Length: 310
Image (cartoon, rainbow, N blue to C red):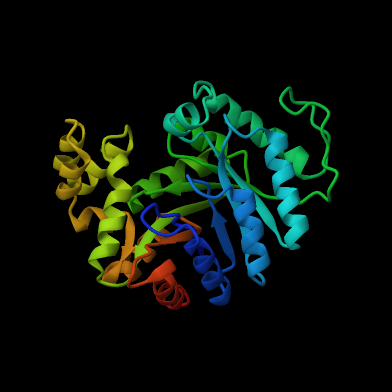
């Protein structure tokens, strides 16, 4: 199954999120992932999207568990659901030290423990129960319970195991080979559904490639991700990234083939779709590039919708 995730690209107007959302709804995609970066609050954006679209279901997040407590997430999901009269699900994750510690001034240490706790606590709150958890003690929703599903964003072994206790695991920026291993570990731990966010551009657009190139820069030196890209044949790029170059120098070293290894790009999009499905990915959430030639990624969404129907 194909769904859509908002790109929230920093080099494009934030309002393009609504353009992408309306296109996804018009094209019949069943689900839209509404993340939270440096612009819109995800609950506010989810409400705006729900009021601007007709039928598409919404998954809000992932929310950083060190920043958003269970009450905040449950109240937010119930609020959006009540206001837009639509299915609203939630996703949670540990996020990064940059977001948690620098942007929000909260400690990132202990995020894995908080992630495991929130899966259990959120389940009760979203179903209308009263919380006994220390961070939400005694709270019960006053609005109708949204009965949202819970998705956990995962990559490392601990998060993959925690995700098995949720309704779904979501992977970001993974090769099909990595997705196969993680999906296998997830199901071995008792998990069922696996989603992968996959960047996409069906046009031969240099601007889109540059946008996607900037999107992977921060991952190349990261533990786990670096090894994944090295396994895919880009060990030289990973080694250079870990040498501490200026981002501009690193950008120039990233070949199109590296982007293609984790994306649905041009003529290889259909082949890569099949590889993710063969890897055990149940749902591919398309993250369309957005450029002057394809604002909001609308053309990419239209063309991938046709491929997904085959």
